[in-house]
Length: 42
Image (cartoon, rainbow, N blue to C red):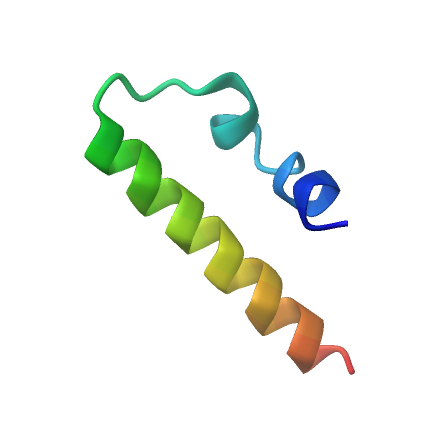
């Protein structure tokens, strides 16, 4: 389920970032937003 939620973030799906650290930062941001919205809507 988490992977399908992450696919909503097009920036992660296509991987526009060339540097690994910026890609990892976007992954962390996406997971933080997913977690925040998941608990907010509960």
